[in-house]
Amino acid sequence: MQGKTIVITGATSGIGEAAAEALAAKGARIVFVARSAEKGRALMDKLKAINPQADHDWVQADLSTLAGMKAAGAALAEKAPTIDVLVNNAGAVFDRRQETADGLEMTFAVNHMAYFVVTQSLRPNLAADGRIVSTASAAHAFGALDFDDLQSTKGYSGFRTYGVSKLCNILWTRALARRLEGAGVTANCFHPGGVSTGFGSNMKSPLRFVLALAKPFMLGPVQGADTLVYLASSDAVKGQTGGYWAKRKLTAPSAAGQNDANAERLWAVSAEIAGLPA
Image (cartoon, rainbow, N blue to C red; front, side, top):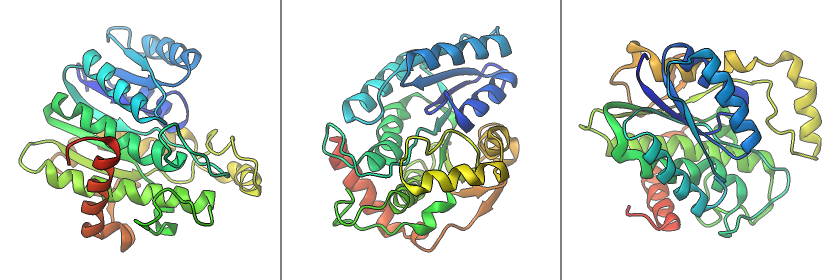
């Protein structure tokens, strides 16, 4: 990875931070997105200590709004004219339904639309053999895509809505890979496993306490980032695209995660929401 540029969203904590550090240690230049200036500066200090030769950089952005997503994409494009690997990792889970400034349900906005908008903004910057790696989850199996209620207005459940967003990640990856055919750029997503991070700490429902009880039995962030780092850096996956991976192995998602008609419909709806060409 010496001399390569890697762009990462969701890099200031958990598996995103572990991946940024691991890839920097392999010689990569890291350009990342941070919502918090304090966390952004802290990660910059770590990356400079790990790989002081690389010109690491970051942008501050709120990936919950369409304007923030587009601003992040524009700023990243300026700081990284050529991107060897784009990692979509920003994500969250919410126990109560919240709407963004655009009227989108927060989980759908952060976990899916940010992937879509940032990637569309940066596609022209991807190297000829560039890679797109996106964090999905086995939780996608608990999500059922309802195009009449993508904003989860009916009987909101935080875990179910999170599962739908992860299903969106898989379907979007499949649709993206088809659009990149022949370009040399690959797109894959992965399940990190159950990882002990700050994920879900914002919740107040009983699920927060379930997560807290499970943490001693979960993977650490470095273990959770392993497949991400593998997909971003290994020659063994060169040319592999459109896949869902777990423990470094290509894995079949749920039947819903293989529905290419829904993948295409989701792409069209996402483009319409973002005001971008389909």
